[in-house]
Image 1 (cartoon, rainbow, N blue to C red):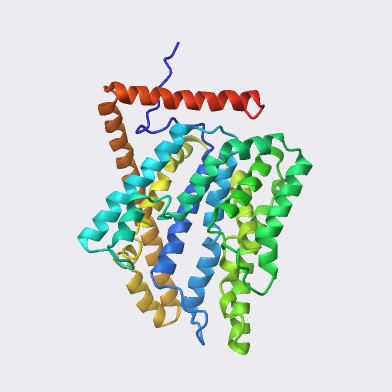
Image 2: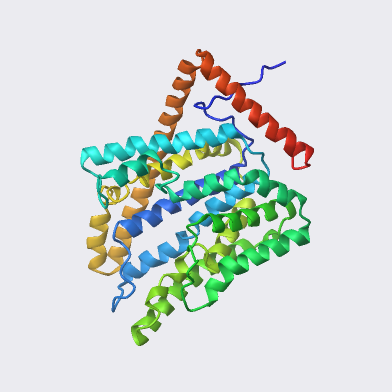
Length: 401
């Protein structure tokens, strides 16, 4: 019999069986995230309150509209896979250690090297590096880990609910946190614009519903394309329409980017549509093997380029200032420059992020090998494994696995 592999806190987790088509979507979504941060923090999105937008500036906002689904897609994929898995303390610890290493190492490197922009090296900055989850250094990871802590309860609730019960629950949540804010011409005080744990819970439950019961409309040939393309074009058109209302009346200035918020109904439906497209994609052979090998490292892309020490610096390193200059001149050459530098930046950041996380995994492996000879470490591992086993047993007894 093959001996069971021990998973240590600093060791990479064992791989689950991966679906190459959805792992490809994970990679695409992370590339879209990089696009959003390149455009927004690189100064390539013109002020919507300005009197005019030239062709390259319109192209930048169109690109923004087609990539705004990225975060919802990443949330959806997380929920889709998490809803079919059990809580593991070992995974929680590994994720926390991964975030902490990036936060401290890159945050200090950025500050001490002088490349950091947009923030100051003070006590608050240092506390943010040391406590990245509590201080919201990476808002997505704060929301993700909160949801992961809720997984035993959320997973049990999903498994025990009937289709009708889950439909009602999901419908009420989406009505409260998505639909109402999408139709009212005012800002709701409790609206987190999708940067919060409650919206992540809504997306998680949607993904769990799709996994458990499916959505027949997504099985139709062109539904995913229509939802994605229609939703993104709707975001673009709605944003321009609000801009025209503001320019003519002076009202709704706070609503100009409403259609670009993660918990607006159009980006949400577009994300579900993009998931539907990739769910039908067939990826086999060497291509599938390569995607499945790369996909586990995509989180490193986010943790690298969104670190406070680099967050507002890397865009100019990768041509954002040149693209902005070309765009200011107008014309299709400006569009070409925008696309060239954006694609180059995405490729560079994605490659660096993948390589950085491979290095991080190698470091964790070396730490594991070094610490595994210490009896306190082994006892700690045994206790963590015992907790994991207890959660699996209880969830199995409850009928959740």
